[in-house]
Image (cartoon, rainbow over all chains, first blue to last red; front, side):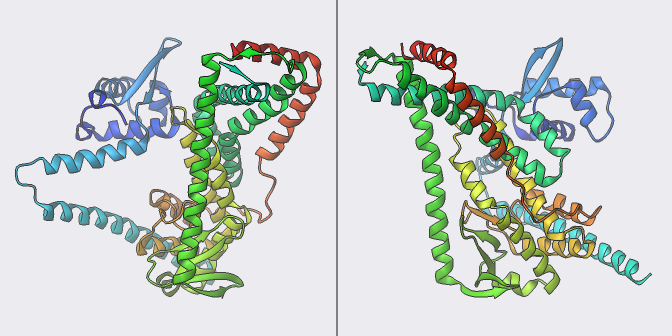
Length: 140
Length: 322
């Protein structure tokens, strides 16, 4: 984990594109702007990716070094440390309120588990469809 | 500090191990993203072997360098009667080396003890039966337990709930998946990974381990379905059923669960339902690190027989000890 004074800005400050970029850097390791732009699922302008990486660097989530006239970015924290901090930020942020209600926190956790159930439901649906497809193919 | 001949040998061996291991680990940390990209382009079993070999390489190569070059050069060229002062840097490197070995050995021993304790607990709670010819322990109230536990004689552990929830086809596919883990001795590899030192900063080695764990599961999926689309769907259904019952992967560090990582579940199911995974042979090739280590050992043996190599190594050891 990072020292408290080195702690990057809050996780809630990250947007969807920033999270997607973080995911890519965890998966592929150190990359330059061009490599990140190529790996993103949706095509984005080079300058957009460059600005996003620069913003993440300024927020303290990334490190960078200059090599062959281009910046190469890498994450400052492992994914596990990031997830740990996300959970910590969430719980701490909630409990420092004047009247923290445990019930609300539990209800949020139940909702999160519900999302997992939703994923399992979707996967089951895909399996049913595939079974039907195989049955059709078997009959024809 | 003045040390006797044999203690000096031990200190030098440990210090050399630390230095060689540190250099190789730093290099591997830099190479890890490239290795992961290389693994993506290979078949899962081959990708898993590549990542395992890469992860174990610094430890195996360091041991070979120390045993094949440093120790013979010291024994051959260091006069036994000579009294020599050992420098602080050398002592510090030796102490760090002893510490990293203590940490990784402790980690391995802890895993063995926890695993043995968990197996004892399962033996007490579970009832032994045979499923498709496999010795299996069925445990009541264990949620989504479907795992292979143990190192040398791994045993299947299945919860009663899973057994009730899966159809015959799903159960057969899941059993084939665990059999594939058993054939490729994945729990033993897990222990080797725990025993391999990893203390330098950097996420490279952990990313190789995570990659290995993912491709090990994919390879077992591929061997379980053997290119049969029907079996692919059954295995996918079994994965979802087991995930629904809740998976506890923390029970034992030397255990391969059917659903090891919830985050990878969607990718595994999509793979199984998409283009039918390739048929992977049940026969296991030699793990990649065995031929690599044999090659390194042969090269080192040849090098250590050359007096010039030993003299050069001895000169380096003389620098190190000061």
